[in-house]
Length: 337
Ligand code: ATP
Ligand code: MG
Ligand code: FE
Image (cartoon, rainbow, N blue to C red):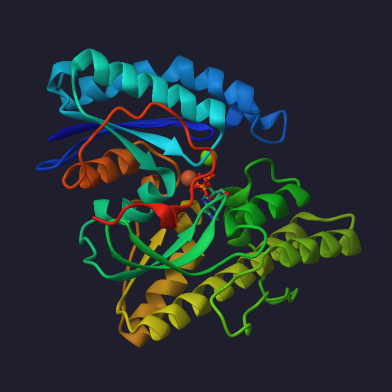
């Protein structure tokens, strides 16, 4: 079954073709980062308009790369939420129009289920059950995942998401927007021992997180050290990254202990972070658990994870026209398969 996936929840237009027998055949992403940079963040109306411009050309590019035509598409999956209402409506409109015109089934996908299942696009592929750490720009959650749609939240951030803390700290250090990857790159040349930043909620005894205080600690450090030279900036990046990685790592290990599970799955943009991966791999080796990641380029928003989650859902659910967007949509309300 060939599934076309369309992602347009925020500032990336993602399109992909996933074949349930042959795997991922093609995927294309257009990032709007350059367009939003001058405003220092995503402008929703500009995002919607740009999705309109990009989604069909990206679809054509995917079909060409996979050497397929529209007629070969067996089903269409699109991100129905959560996200920006206008941006979601673009994906919903195009997906429903295509499904109607091609007379093919359509399935509405939850963006976070897309992220959560994206590590299943890697080889080796993790079996259920597993503990999942979803670390994206908007979410930081630990979940016990027992199957498609069986998501038990074990803990989550009480304020900022880890990715958000990366981006906000990067902004404080004049590293642009979204500065997570730039902060991480600079941390490579920094000395993590020069400054000691707090490890929020490390000993809270639960699996919740908090990152807004860490961002404030970065702000205080920036003010205290002003004017900041290049080495100091790199040292602050290294200290910040080390604090985030330590908290994420320890809570993942605690979640594995609490559930008795042996597999850990990382999803979302911060899952691309090299130091986080190194720390998790090292812990997995020492503590004898397995850790799985999405392919590096599928950590942040993309159409492949939507096509894949759609293909999984289509095995079980009856597809139906579902025009609409759900800017707020609780993952735990999804139907189990
Ligand atoms: P959500 O899925 O929760 O709605 P989102 O779609 O914006 O949020 P993603 O696209 O999964 O989130 O991830 C984007 C986030 O990942 C940004 O905050 C970005 O800074 C962060 N990020 C990406 N690469 C890295 C990296 N190498 N190190 C740290 N953070 C990173
Ligand atoms: Mg994005
Ligand atoms: Fe996302």
